Image 1 (tube, rainbow, N blue to C red):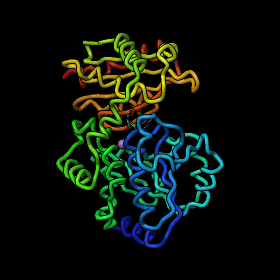
Image 2 (image 1 turned 60 degrees about the vertical axis):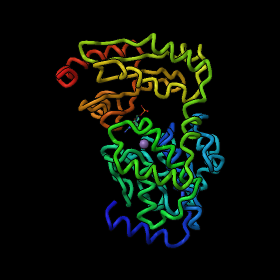
Image 3 (image 1 turned 90 degrees about the vertical axis):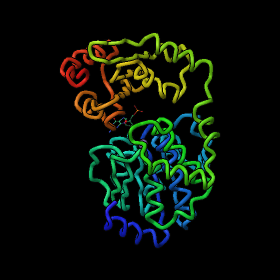
Image 4 (image 1 turned 180 degrees about the horizontal axis):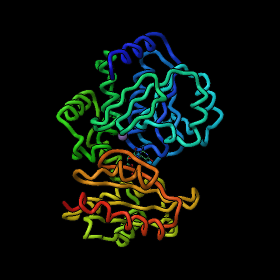
Length: 338
Ligand code: 5GP
Ligand code: MN
């Protein structure tokens, strides 16, 4: 965050504001952790802050302190619109273009509030007058910690804030193993534990709430895995029928794509998941090393994200999409095998 933006934000927050905080659609641990962590901080600083999520999110995130205050734009539509209409400041967290919030986009675009972006994805668009965008950051939660520090609020980080921010850093770094994890990340995490984050309990809450049907779905996904040795690439498909068979619930496929990368030599892993209701395939892409899945997804699958983790979608069938995917790989052979 540059000094001008920081000073502008400090000045705005020096008087009580009506604030709305927005995560991206299908929010993950970092999106929910960062919005809740920031909300606790702003409420404790005398502001009225409401989180409006574009849609629902997995059960394994719903234990976080303050979860019950989050408005679901799809379910609590009128209340959400009222909060957005009266907002003087709108924070958008863990995304950087308004296309990432689905149906909420036109409502936010109508607002005259001051927009503040806090985000670590590549190629931000310019809807926010105050921008804290840094692609080197492990997570938006680490950035919220920095933001609180910029606002001289570190001593106000309580147990609730610490638990929320720890969660997002843990989930976005793959439990502190991705390349984005720095010594500073560990320093922030150390301070959060000092301030009350229950690290073992958080890990348990997020990762140990499996149902047998989810493990059976994982087994189906792994059976469907296709290894393209020539390109050091694997892909997985899950059809709507398979999801239904294993009683799919939101969040069940989280992390499945990473299994491909545990194979020796594999550099690129993709999962295609059918969503009949939306009429699309949701795509998750992961890589190790220099191959940028952000660029790949931006170019071919209407998505984006980070160098090593991105999302995207396809409007075609699984068969058509995987055929197209395979046809693309020859153009990337050098990058994937050199
Ligand atoms: P996931 O595969 O877990 O849905 O997403 C991986 C990463 O890419 C996350 O950081 C997510 O926020 C980002 N991402 C997912 N879908 C999109 C998209 O359509 N556009 C952009 N810019 N980023 C995305
Ligand atoms: Mn994130």
